[in-house]
Amino acid sequence: MNEHPKSGQPVEIEGVVAQGKLQRLLDVLPEDLRSEMMPLWQSIRFSPGDVLIEDGEVADRIGFVTDGFLAMSKTLQDRHRHIIGLITPSDMFGRAFNGPSGYRIEALSDGAVLTCDRQKFEAIIARSHEAERLFLLSILDELDAAREWVMVLGSSKVVERLASLLIILSRHKYRTLEGTAHAPIQLNLHIHIKRVDIAHLLGTSPESLSRAFHQLERTGAIRIVTPYDVELANLERLIEISGNSLEMRDE
Amino acid sequence: MNEHPKSGQPVEIEGVVAQGKLQRLLDVLPEDLRSEMMPLWQSIRFSPGDVLIEDGEVADRIGFVTDGFLAMSKTLQDRHRHIIGLITPSDMFGRAFNGPSGYRIEALSDGAVLTCDRQKFEAIIARSHEAERLFLLSILDELDAAREWVMVLGSSKVVERLASLLIILSRHKYRTLEGTAHAPIQLNLHIHIKRVDIAHLLGTSPESLSRAFHQLERTGAIRIVTPYDVELANLERLIEISGNSLEMRDE
DNA sequence: GTGATTCTTTGATGCCGATCAACGTGCTAC
DNA sequence: GTAGCACGTTGATCGGCATCAAAGAATCAC
Image (cartoon, rainbow over the protein chains, first blue to last red):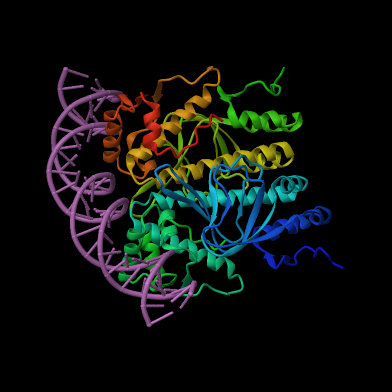
């Protein structure tokens, strides 16, 4: 029995566990809608370079990231590739209640998503006032994140932007460590993303990004263990370099 | 009689006429909620430099711009001022259903807003499914706009960013000219915003911005009549310079 | 009108970062 | 092992832009 677990219990589909926003959404759904929605979900694993939704395509599916990093990206005629934003665990993608996507959704790391038919998702959410409200709140969060990112891109220098990114990534990591009592003084940050992708996210080139990384290391703000493993040795200095533009909320 | 005009008719409060999103919102409200909400509105006129909501303040009011330009801005300790985004006629501001604002809302031009107590606004909207849905859709629009702006800020060069901004501004102007049958070939764009503010919006300095303006003029893309009046002489070239990153939808 | 104030533009200089090129490093295949 | 490949780093050059400084241009007070 117990085909569809009760509210509050972790939801697992094909070996992939729903958490964060998706779990909260399922939690507030009344039992009947919840039962209706559960079988619609499907898990997909991805690897770097995979394209989940093509630029310009009318997305017929929405999804939640359960693990790994996706990006909204766009490459212009002049072959310049921009990464508009990261999509990190718990985030949603796919333009529910909205028109076609102007951006490609692509994978920057290994990971997994849970996806659902877009129209069915919308229809079910729309039948629960609570769920639709929760959905609205998560869009408001996305909006805040996007604006914060506008702020970051406004800082002219690459080191500043990189410092901001590292802080944001550490916040994400911290967010998922809800078990921990206090923030650790020294943060070992595992970066799952290639240098090129970080560069395109920060609006710079891999070369300049590399220099920025090593500049941060020279000032003692970070220590580069491997290109994918960085130790935030001096968080205060890092914040200072970033320009103090970020709210240090823990959510 | 007819204290509260019927749906579909323009709403006017203290000489200021509601249009765009606010009007649509009022239109979908059932008559009782509409009557309840109408007396809550209050018009405020603003001039450049006026601060409507202070950075960090818990906004107790929301508002819709009916005329002129506002900005979300933030100035860091190092006195650097960033403008995160423009708030143009029909746009909302003030974080309904959300926490304190991390940004200042300030006026960049003369204009007017209609404002309403935030909690009362939320309460009334929440009682109408249609209205809450409409609200959600307008937040989704804001999200798109924010992401588009991330895209623009990603282009390294100032001329490109300026070209994009001019296109966006012309779109706004076109949006309000719903009476006109077709887009005019040659667009006379009145810019209500000071150079410093545009500069801070584009993440550059007034000096560099000035040079960018004149560079656009040299290439024939625009003609500068006065600093506040620009003629988009060659829209195609302007789009080309902008990097084609913008969707040319008319809404 | 005149002067004060505010905004825009122009000029000169030095730094940051884009770009091209080459080299280093780690991984996979075999 | 070695070759090949993908990714990261380093070096050198050059253009764009921030910055400082100062000069037009427009507006307002009076």
